[in-house]
Amino acid sequence: MIETSVGALPGLIPVFLIASALFGVPAFLISKVKGWPVGLPLLLALSLAGVFAVTMMPGIAGTGQADSCDVGLSGLDFLASESAQLNVLLFVPASFLAVLLFRRPLLTLAAILALACGNELVQRWTTLGRSCSYDDVKANALSGILGILLGCLYLWGRRRQLPFTRKDAVWGTGATVAVTVAVAVLFQSPSSSVN
Image (cartoon, rainbow, N blue to C red; front, side, top):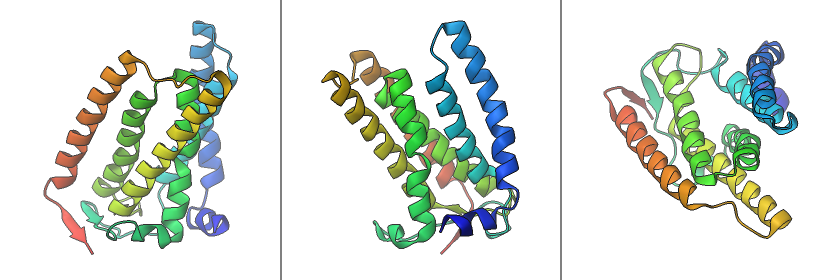
């Protein structure tokens, strides 16, 4: 399954390595300035580089036309596809590591939703040889939520305290609502839908 996905994206490894350097160097420098240990920020940067490489690299699949989006399958039927199963794994590391690093699960949810939906919107508006799909949005959102839950469970297991704060509840809820509204508006804008 993974070999097929890597085969569909020739050059994935070099793009990942370049993205890792582009994301990793700032993460390293910010960690040094803030006095943080560099391990967790670097792992988060690498996981985001992986997401970027897999979702934004031009591919050989897709509709080949800009401004179209596959409406996908109803309910959880999308989970039967190999592509959706890989997408469900895609954001788990990034969201897990973000919860460990920032200790703000609701704000992490907003960021992951923005990133997951933003990837699909870029695929919709460009001719990268990639397909925008509502199934991918659902799989990526599910992936982010799973990573956040795992991060919260890990922190609870270590400290017997969940990382939810009043500040995270206010900012995270507000950001999640704002992202949801923005995504709904952007996905409802005039475009072609492919069944």
